[in-house]
Image (cartoon, rainbow over all chains, first blue to last red; front, side, top):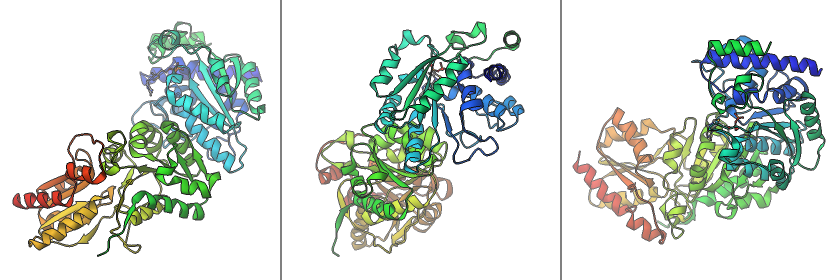
Amino acid sequence: MEENLKEICKVIRKDIITMIHQAGSGHPGGSLSAVELMVGLYFNKMKHNPKQPGWGERDRFFLSKGHACPVHYSVLARSGYYPVEELNSLRKLGSCLQGHPNFCRLPGLESSSGSLGQGLSIANGVALAAKMDDKNFRIYCLLGDGELNEGQVWEAMMTSAHHKLNNICAIVDYNKVQLDGPISSIKELSPLSDKWKAFNWNVIEIDGHHMKQVLDAYDAAAHCKDKPSVIIAHTIKGKGISFMENKAEWHGKAPNAQELELALAELK
Amino acid sequence: MEIKNKPTRDGYGEALLILGETNKNVVVLDADVAKSTRADWFSDKYPERFIDMGIAEQDMLGTAAGLSIAGKIPFVSTYGVFLAGRAWDQIRTTICYSNLNVKLGGAHGGISVGPDGATHQGLEEVAIMRVLPNMTVVVPCDAIETKKATLAAAAMYGPCYLRFGREAVPIVTEENTPFEIGKGYVLKDGKDVSIIANGSMVFEALRASEELQKEGIEARVINLHTVKPIDENILIKAAYDTGAIVTAEEHQITGGMGSAVAEIVSRNQPVPIEMIGIFDTFGESGTPDELMTKYGLTYLDIIKAAKRVIERK
Ligand SMILES: Cc1ncc(C[n+]2csc(CCOP(=O)(O)OP(=O)(O)O)c2C)c(N)n1
């Protein structure tokens, strides 16, 4: 099972860099760091039906850090929401795969995103509606660590905790790098777990590239009944491609043909 | 005629109570100002469908977006400056871009908010809301029309901004006056000039037309409650029939209803236009009447503008 998921991760990573190369622009760093987190959800933990994206009982996933859509687009295609060939159309005129996700254009999305800091609020709204309607689905929301600079995220953290939204599972892709450079040189986040704990969240801290830890974390989150849960996933920006790892310059840059070849060779 | 006064926000509160009864999907969100917006009337009766988000406007708009995605019809209210201004990007990118069914109740629109001063006087909301694709913008003229507009907003699909005021203003419509989002209507006919108004300025426009009549000037008065989608036909017809237009609104001239009228008239049936509104300045503290007078928002100002614009024909 985990071996199988690890294989899928490789496929997703190849998709990400290939589609960004073809588009000529896009965000590889924060897409690559989230691969295990996303694969663990879509290929194992989440209840969903690619043939029926609007199925009422499905678990919901919100990509708050919209710029990392290449990983989401690839995971959705590989799950069967639309043909894998569509990935070639990323960022092209008329494409369903907009540079940042557009809810109206693509089945499988729960919201539009691209303006950082907003996803957890939206997830809370869905979670509150689920409580009102006695629905049991779970709501996941992936956030960037740089994204936590946004005040709205902390407003939303208070909302989830105040309403004891145990159907919420936030995930922080803690890759320690944002756009301009390292988190530590821009606005220090640590002690990050303590901050979430102080906001009354159930905190689960893991290695976000370790598939077993990822899967166990989703289970632990589902078991917590009195609080919302957050998975603080320590990750590496650009994970899997040596020359991209931990480099802010690969936050939002497309690999050229030569770099693509090198990268694909590393993912063999 | 006997004039009754009532704040437009009361119409919002009354409509929410009706919706609470008739539509189980309606939920109301507020940012710690429920008493001012009249959302507290709803929360007293339907606490399980009311969420006080605290002083967190951006989070409130995002939460409303999520509720609408899950099939609810959220009404979100706070002062217009904070609703439209502080959460503009949330309204733009999360709500309008996805065409979500979120209703925005913008209280305290206009300079007549009074002593709280410029920070609380919404004078820009119409401009910054009407530029957004998918958004509907309504500025009702009295409490009865606000009630109808709120019910109509619940009945339509898509984001809708309702603007209402703090002070009691004269009731100029009746329960059976027709109201349809996107359709202005003629309150009084005339052939010499058209006065196009919304919100609290509709009453001033009617009063101006009565005074003008005494001088032999026949003014058509149009209530343009919906700024977007705008009623092009009624505007083009007004320009064609009367050859001169005065617009009157409790809002910045730049980008407001008057600008929207000019956009239509200039492209279809160009005629001279004079605009009554706030001229690129912030408000200040004072009583509502003092402010309306100082900032040129009374029937007297409309009369002068009507005479000026007729001269320019
Ligand atoms: C509100 C907003 N401000 C700025 C940006 C531009 N921007 C896109 S990605 C990014 C950095 C995000 O860093 P992080 O959340 O750490 O993402 P990751 O490292 O996971 O890619 C910035 C500033 C944006 N998309 N939205």
